[in-house]
Image (cartoon, rainbow, N blue to C red; front, side, top):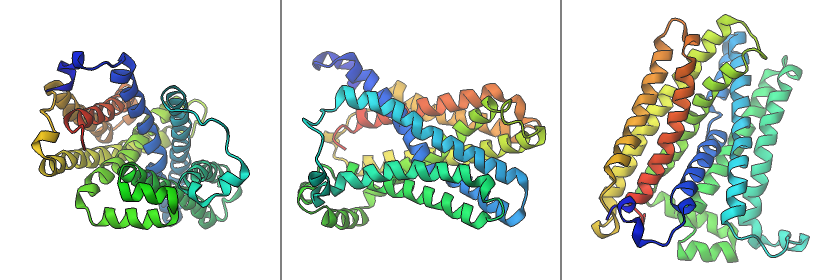
Length: 330
């Protein structure tokens, strides 16, 4: 019973069918770019420490700016969605309620969501001040990356185990015991590894695609010279190509693992159009990134940079829709 062919059976509003998945996919695209997308920036920073080439320093600064922009974009997308679809609390929590250990499951991710962008901002702003102390600058960036990855891990565990009866009970009673229980459950279930790899790899792929666009939009303001932009455009395209291919391979692995572990009565035939689009768009994105890598003058690939970024976002939204459509009980 393909979902889109049987909509008449459901009493659903248009925003619940189409707008909400698009908003969640778009917000997730930017959120993953923020949480997991800083790896290429820290890689460029470490390359600068080894080789002392100014191009790596500038590229790390611009890529980390993209990561911070992704956090702002995720807020812009998610806040209206949360107001529209999530129930609001009856009253703001008091200080005593915030101090309740049972609220740690929510306060710790909230604090990390504030700390991580502040660390990225400190990393960007301290570039000039710590020019002679680059190890300290790298440590600030590493702290920003690790805080984002820790938040990604907590959100992933919450997503996987929010309906687990034992862990849900521990979240309400003893959040300190819920995290070890969730980790043990995750380590003992190999079926949970493919979705983690899929979401994680989409972060750097999204950040690199956004960086290609940001390099074009900010060139007149941050004019570092033509040679630098040739280097940066090719480096961003190379990162986007690698992580797009890796994320696509992890998506294939995810669907294969779900097919093997989900009973036939809990899955349905995928929509042909969705399947073709979700599988074909990443290939088009990879080709657009590849043409930039191979081009002697990658600055000419402006349309390809915008097109690859948009198609990458569309592919992520379509893959999530296909996942929900095919495995509604997963």
